[in-house]
Length: 512
Image 1 (cartoon, one colour):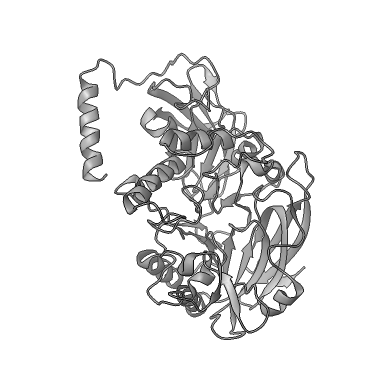
Image 2: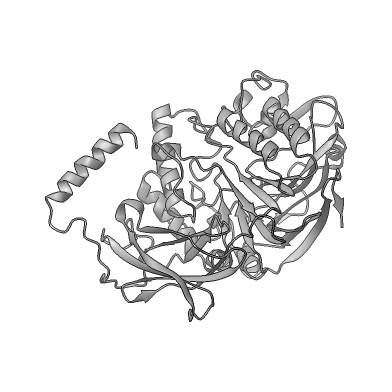
């Protein structure tokens, strides 16, 4: 806590101490409606533990979720079978109004590499049953099949992709950000919005409740554990550190908004308590191992980055401070943590779960180069420094997973993009949006025959909606791009648009 937050907490606690029963937890609350309208979820699996999540909200679009500020006791159970005849762990937790009546349970003492089922109880109500699993132990034989998702704008389309994802028999889902949007998109939207603009913590909570009430999203969360990070729309479009999109907010105003967005994100995700001195400074970068098969480096490319160069947008480079060596995407501490980890950890695959496209894309045919300032191409020295680290420490066993841009891409990553066709040292799979951008198309996103020639590292592109599945063994990585023909109406079918293969230790990616 910041000192002022601590003093406010002490003041509140002192006042509450004078009010009878202010801190009492009710294990038999009077709930007029089902409190589990937002479903259940699990995440951050380790070989002996997993995080369980739910949030009590009998009336989810009310500012307090319909809980009336009651501090509520919640029971939880973990079983070795779906029928809950073999309970292996159980306990109690408190859903407190200060944390949006969210519940986070870090269940320990589990066996490695096995499936479990879990549920919550509050009063006379019982939640839906969720399925989760632990990671394999180091050195044990392991395989992995997981999904990649990002960018789900509620008003832009239906979350049909998640219904298909729930049926995929996945071990894990990685979500790369833009879980909510801070603006409603009420004009021209295909689904009703809740609050028009976010201004308070209650507004953020309502926005998450609106999204999490979606049945398809709930099904995907209940099917397997998730690894979750954030991008910009959990706070403010294209924000960079303490700088907002339009540059009008002061640092104090942006930090206040970050505090609201970060707290609401944590309240609504199955993640462990982050490192923090205040809500505005949550450290969510973390490493999660899948035995010795893969290490996931879950990154934060928003909180620590320098402001976008040259006024943001797509710019002709070089321009202004674009190639200033002091500019950073990850911040010094996170970049050092990642670099040291890539050197020290010998997993078969190193997986960077992050937000914005790492490969550059030149939009302008000819000698001039035009690239995005919001992506890694806007931070060229930081990008090439990271790619150089990968070349030295984990070449051709590193995979970068990316979201953000509402389209599918397959990119080979060179050791440096300052040298034409430098050695390929990693592969980037960019997954499209769940619904953001509407139905999408097979082309667009500024890709033409002329620009393809400008970007020989780009191997494939598609702008439909959907998700990515990855099937991983010791020596091979397969990526399948799963797409839908439309999202502006529910019920779209799923198909595989393209499949790709990596061989560990071999440069380049090949289409299957």
